[in-house]
Image (cartoon, rainbow, N blue to C red; front, side, top):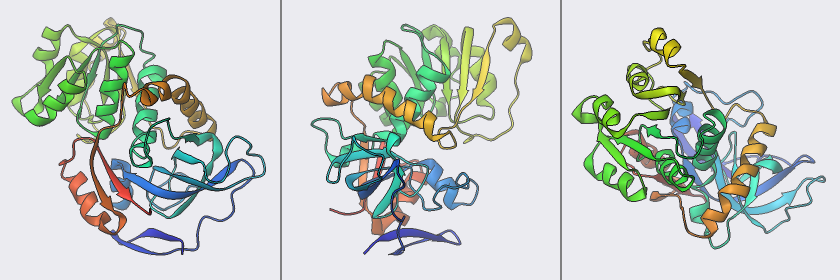
Length: 322
């Protein structure tokens, strides 16, 4: 029986579903084993982040599992292959149909459980570090929410590619995790502004900011000449004060970036970049997604509350099937 999480008035239920249908020519159908919770899922559930036109209204932006069937134009994947996939929606279900270019084989030696924690965070990290900000080796990164699923991926990825990271987070245990993953500077956001600490560290060439709000003005103060702020979230609010004088004099750039609404072609390019540059590091064990906890899909309400309360360090996964 095909099942999915349905959202009704903000309430979640795991119930029978008609399924995603047969895969079109350039798509594959995946039998889902694991999915993961992302903040976008919380926002969509709350009614403030609707899926892009044409996307599934079922929650879930990444999965791991096995190919169930392939469209007529797909030749590089076959039924039974273990894969992970970046989705525009539909992951909280036993089956999902997704463009084949957004699907990759599970890295060698990596379990399906671990693979479910890879697509969204590593695709987001690569897109924003090496596409939007176009980081060069040696350039320095300020990362907010460093102990999140995305943050823990960014620290590892940037460090592996020669970009030192200064991470902020909300408690000392999370900061210790950031240090252990490779961050060479850290700051507890509950101790006030990060500006002096980051300035003493040497300033940064890029800020990856999921907060927005009043963080933007402080981000500007720690940016070196030609620095870039990549805004990926609005946890601190959508209104910000920008010092246009500093932006002009220091040639700063403020870049808004989302992954979910990009074209299939764009997402395919990001996934191929991961396959070339990141998959070998995952297979070698040089980097790995940090998993905080796993929950059965029937406990999705509790799992989402856990993430909403910022209790997780790393990714929170949902088990769909065996």
